[in-house]
Image 1 (cartoon, rainbow, N blue to C red):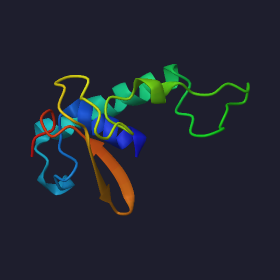
Image 2: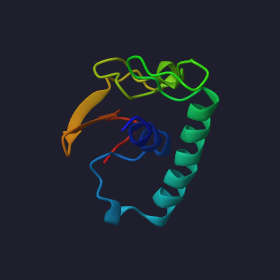
Image 3: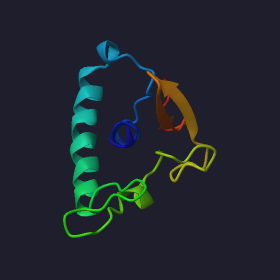
Length: 102
């Protein structure tokens, strides 16, 4: 859910908005955001959780750059509003209620 939360934030889409309700413009923004977020994650070596390392023994550093993921109750890096955490399908999702309006 790291990349889902980050991509939705980048696209300005609220995580509770059903996929079937997305406009064409939102779909296009989301597609661009997914590519951007994944590219940044790859450049940072991925997202290491706990003791994961790559084939060279290096951890990924993308988690240090997240804008919303795992930042519940911390200020949004864009608007300073507290990041919220919700559970969807037994998985945590993080979002900014101001930057990602319904």
